[in-house]
Length: 358
Image 1 (tube, rainbow, N blue to C red):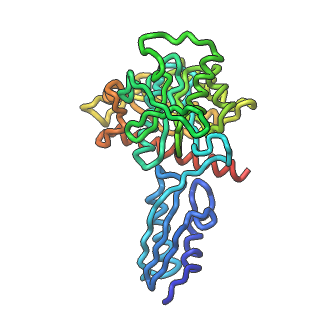
Image 2 (image 1 turned 135 degrees about the vertical axis):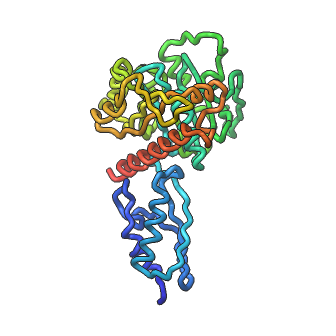
Image 3 (image 1 turned 120 degrees about the vertical axis):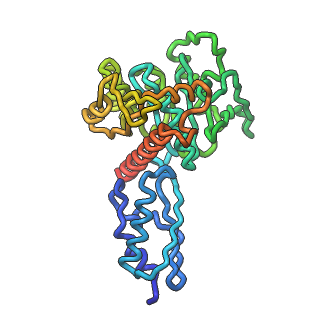
């Protein structure tokens, strides 16, 4: 039989993206369709390189062509990605998505989560930047072995000076810690701190990014309000630990993003230090701080629960040594962060689709 492009596209209309609730042809995710006799080839363009369902969608496309067109078809599928953005904007136009990592509570591991989230997304092929916006306790210089590092700058044709982010592990990095003595406190009032953070966005040469991760300080103060009201934020990821004393503050931090004057989508909740697992007994879980606190928080606000990160010594050691644990592909913890990164990217694509359709 002769296979036509119309037959192949009709078959692929039976494959639906489970998140976006539309078929792949309607979503314009099928590209470069070519047919030579029984050989069918096309590109499946996903909404993120970190898509956790790429294998499932590829197999569904293969089965659809075999079932609806011909069992004898030889199907070749190339997978690429084009990360979506929430809306067209002239502000920071080369940055597709700004993702805030936040918590109303200090000490829950926001910087650890933000750093490993950035590393995991970059490992999947995304273009990633990371801003350390915690002006009073910046952690990124330590976690990327960049204490004492100073960014360089370049001058544009119109005479403006732009900061050049430091690149490490495939990630573009800026931290207020790069501009201050690590042994000296930063006694800045709110407006001065907020202006300094805005410079990390506006006065830096970020280039093209799929995701810009922002590690926010604890609480719900000036810096949070400045960032959410000054820049086109895709969404926020909330980090908590299981115990009630942390959840009480985190609940307020999450609720801030839902306030009418802010109204930032919450992409989900991550529970850090969820349980203790001894290195020599990796299957054992001890819930020393309580159980399912993050999951309950997510359910109460009707937002996704993105996953759990256990208490493992190697996580803190990796951060202290300047090489986030997600870089160690042989570690089970690296796999946990990779899974969470995929879910975050998934929620970004869903949120962006909803924004465009509104």
